[in-house]
Each structure stands twice: as C-alpha cells, then as structure tokens.
Image (cartoon, rainbow, N blue to C red):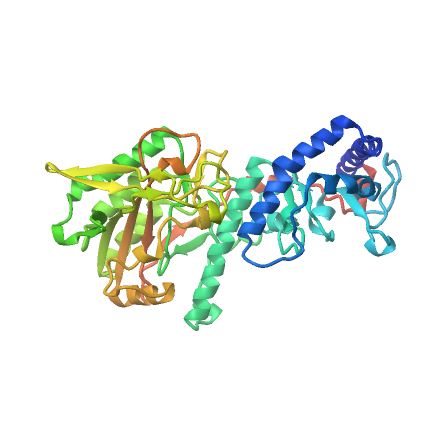
Length: 485
C-alpha cells in the first residue's frame, strides 16, 4: 500500500510542478509576486545571516538581488524532473511511471529533481546537492530515525539555501537525539582523555522520556539493568518552560532556597564594578541543594530531578564528594543586548536595554541582583526557551568555588577532581530574551558541576521498556512482495 501512496503523491506533485512551470514561462504576475516575496522575506535575509555568522569561509555563497534570480527562473524550471523512488523497477499498476534511476552524469546542463519516496529515499539513497526536504515519515527508534536524516552534513556553496519542513513532533525527537549523540561524543572524548579501554569505560545513551526507544527491543535485551553516573559531568537546564506556572514555580524555588540558607556572609558576597556578582555558599548542605532541584519544574529530557538528587545523596553517604557549594550568579552590566527578533548579526549585538533586576532578601537584608542574558535564536515560536549551544553557564563562573583564578575547561575539571568539590550555579535569566512572555519574573535555570570520581558509587536503575513500541509494523517499500498490495 505504501508504494501506491508514494505513486499517488508523485503524480500530484508532478501536476503542481507543471502548473508552476507554465506560470513562470508565461511570466504570470501573481506567481512572480509570490516568488519575489519568498525571496525577500526568507532567502535574502537568510543568506545575509549565514555570511555574517558562518564559522568558516565559503566564497561561493553570495548575496543576489531579485532581478538576478528572476532572470534565471525560466531556465531553472525547465530542468526540474519529478521522480518516484521505489525499491522495485516495476511500473505495474502504477499511475506515475517516472521511476528511472537518478543519474546526474547523463545531463550536460544539470538536473533538478523532486524525489518522492518512502524508506528507500530516506535510508537507501544519497541525493547530490540535496537542499530542500519535506520530511513526514518517522520511526520510534533512535538509530532508524538518524538514518533517515538525509539533510545533515557539509553543504559547500549552498548551505544558505537548505530548508527542512517537518512536524513539531519530529523536530522535538531529532532535538532529543542530537542531545543524546552529543553526550555520547563527550563520553568518547572522556575515554580518550583518560586513556581507558572501552571495556573499562561504560558508555551510555540517554533514554527518551516519552515514545522513543534507542533501538529495537531485541538489541536492548540486556540493557534493562543500567547504572547512572554523573562523574565529571555538567548537566544544565538549556530547555526551559515558558508557562507562567513553571516560571513562578522555579523563581519561588530560588526564594525558598535563600529563605532556607539565608544570605551569605559579607566575605562571600563577591562584588564587581560596585554591583553584586556572586552570592557564594561554600560547604552547603546537600539537603538544600536537593530540595531546590526536586522542586524545579522542567521537561528537558536530559534532566531528571530524582536521578540527580539520588546521585548527589549516594555520593555524599560515601564521602565521594568532599564539599558542595551553591553560587547564585548576577549580571553586573548596566546595559545589555536583547535580541528582540532572534536574527541579529554579530555586528548588531550592541547594548540596547537597561539590565533587568530582581531582589533577594532574608531577615530584613535585601540584595539587588542583575538578570543574565541568554538570547533565544532557535524555536522562538515554541513553548520552550531554548538556550544557544545548550549552555546556560559561562566558563568564568565554573571555578568560583575552586582554588584557581582561571584556566581551560579541561584544567578546571582536573582541579575540581583534585579538590573533590561539587558546584550548583543558579542563574536568573532576563525574560525579554525569549518572545511571548511578560510576567515581570526572571526565568531561573541552573548548571551542576560534578567532580570526576574514580571510585564513585553508581546509582542502579531498572529500566522498564515499553514493549508495545514494536507492535506498529512499518511497511517496507523496498520489498518487492509489497507491490501486490
């Protein structure tokens, strides 16, 4: 049945493509006006943004004006060919017969292809110069979903032209898998840095909190018993909820923390430019830390409150972590840059607003704190406040509790291991950094730094896998036996 659906969609796409071809060839004013609007509202600003922010030099990416593009439209549409991609070469009972192999070498003037297909297109074929994908097909397994992602990679000369259209659910799934992949890469880096062998270093892949599973259940047969470790890791809240209830809850959690532990002694109130920079609480009670984490409201897949707090308590019982510190970070700037559109280039990032402030108080003493700025670039229309580079903290804050005054990320981790200290950094973020909220309340987030522990006590979990995930059978259009359906 899937083959027939692919065939039908390819037929409809081809008919619509013909309409656009005829309209462009006849210089239809309406279609040209639509194309001009798309170019000016989407492609032109994107090219400009890519040129300003690309971290490598690509001399083939250039800005163009509409007239230059308009003059190439007729030649461009003549090269477009719609292909239906199946695992079989038979056209029996098919409505759309254009299924020949895509061979670019056979065309002297090049070929522009609109390929319509199922599993073979998403997993079994590479399209040269792929620039636009409409992606709806999905699976609930990490490995299969990553195989279907054909738009990743280096796009020399046309990265500014690449577009991906999909559903919000699939976007969130790929977002989660990307986080899981980055965590696994960090584990590989740790393995290399410590000169361990794979048999001495247990790698882990993050589970999904909802419908996704890492791979097929037969491959996960022996994975139900797992041991969680945060040794040397740095879990951070980079995907914050934007609902009023969540923001108020987390700000209240910060106030309850201060109510519980008070304000620090004057020696631990660190001032910069006559403004409070850090409220440092060395040798903090882990119950206060765990209560704050447990009460924090978040839906980020990599943050599980109970997992974090249980790990902290287990290491405390074994005296694996010598000391925990809490540090509430304040912004000491007078002016800050708020990116109200999320599209500002580096040259445009100049202070344009007064720093937002809030107050913490205990026993009649009041301290004014400045809100940190983390402008949201991606997913601004979503219900989440995504922080760029998945990083809420700053390098200069990571050693505030250590006996050093600077150093690289590796050096800071080594010092933290030597001193056997854990650190909870708390940030109150300016709500103007993310759109569609105006509650007058800072958005609280945190970052935890665990020391590397050689003889840690790992926390064991029994993973209950949802065995109904494999009940949904995915029809494989590469199988000739399915052609009879």
